Image (cartoon, rainbow, N blue to C red; front, side):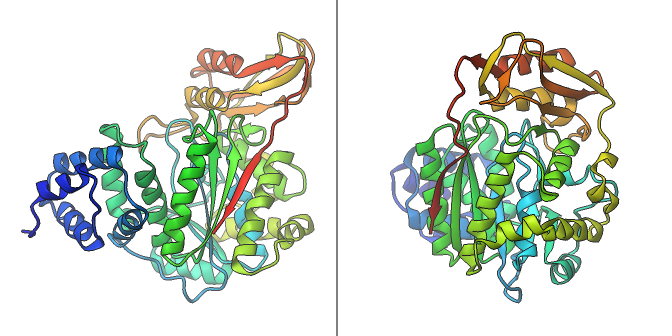
Length: 429
């Protein structure tokens, strides 16, 4: 049995006092051993929600969470970079950024998750490629890292297990929306993953967890402080999620769009954000930022993606012919009922439409349809005529009417095109 009285630990935070790392290690070590019940940890989480945590305390909590499981050692690899997004609608940037970085000389050994509700997970997207898998032993993970310079693996329970336990409690105790707890959750997995450079894409707006720019800045500052305190190079890009990223929302559709972007076409906003994130990662590791555009335009990033897909069991023919990806067979075209310019496109409503079609999960572990989704033919700034197609909906009949209602409510039109910046700010540490 552990030595500290748990109520004293909870009272300290309730009263605004600061925990030391040894105290955090003792409390959460006992929790993981089953010596402290969920309800006492829940009480502590609520105390943090109201009292917050100091920078030093937040760093200590993050380290305790990272050290609660296996820590990957990437010290033998050059220019290690990990890229993470806070989640959004149509956000397939990892599929473009990771091969750009790897083709430019970085090592990208990435642990990724699955999606929940309207946000798509990178592993889910990649699993729409026939044969592709993300399950690895550590030896296999490191072997592909050496061979390809790029690996994306599904997160296992061995990586920062304390984070999983705490998030489950936060989810049911109304304590998710706490900057120190959000930052420590994200960064604990990044520290455990072992990369020297961490590039974060923090989404801001209707389709993001962070709704305001100031809230996103606070989260970014907190994560930068954690990373610097742990000896990492840090870059954070704040990007808009008022509208979806790119035109494709849905797993197979997003992979197709990512391949098109790597092939030299694809939507301009996806290309812009991918080059920004890749450039920041390259610069932070000491490489030339300009290489990002060079390897994309030369086709080297596409070649690296093909090599990566094949190494993880996927059919490389998909990279040369994205039409081989399986899409839902039924297509409905939603037409414009008014003419003018698209002035707004609510990302949350679009994401919820794909969820209604079966392309998202309400609970962890739920099966999802990788072939459904939407192609946004018109986005903010585009001129639209009466009766012109706004969206093409790929479906199998499930939830179509509700999805169409959500998509209709997502669009707003007016007489003038809006100013719609994508990259809002870059923060460096």
